[in-house]
Image (cartoon, rainbow, N blue to C red; front, side, top):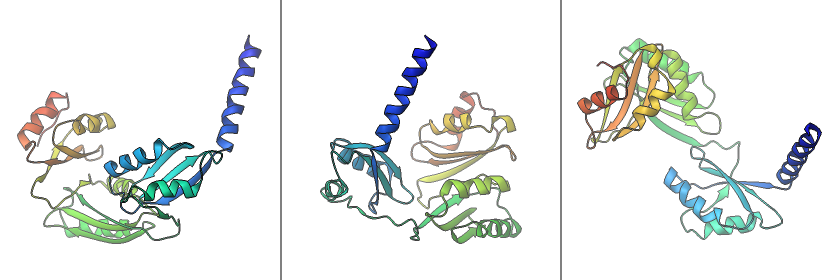
Length: 240
């Protein structure tokens, strides 16, 4: 019985390995693909195409990797399908090209010029960093970076490791920010998921070192007191 099971497992992995070996991958840039909704529309265009076996998106680079069966389709046909969308036209992806991206991050713990200088020093040491602009008056940092060399997640993690709790920053009047103290043991991915599920919440981050919970929210959909009440209702101990 065990021998038969092992034989079946070997057959299964052999078949899957053969299938994987028969697949080709095309990576293209789609400069108009700026958000998850855009990626969804690209998925709708390609997923029904014979021979397309899988899609992997990178919105920072604005690329899609298309796994396809060369016996059923080819790169020219895939590119033609994308061109036919009108908006999501493909272009060549060069991993050595400089892909400039920018993002704003709110960082409430940044209080002094020394904090700002520390952030600049550490972020400029990162590979792919173009510019770092802390704004002490508004408590945010704007960075520009090469998406072929680093990522938003890597930059955010660097700030977390330094003792800051960064969340998305926008200049819209409809956007506000909240900062709460929480027990260090509550600074978990589970807490992030719970708070992200609340109405009006755009972004959440936690920092166990600081015992902090930072939130970006849409103030036309919720407010500080409502957020506080809802977070407590989720069983998270918080205080302003």
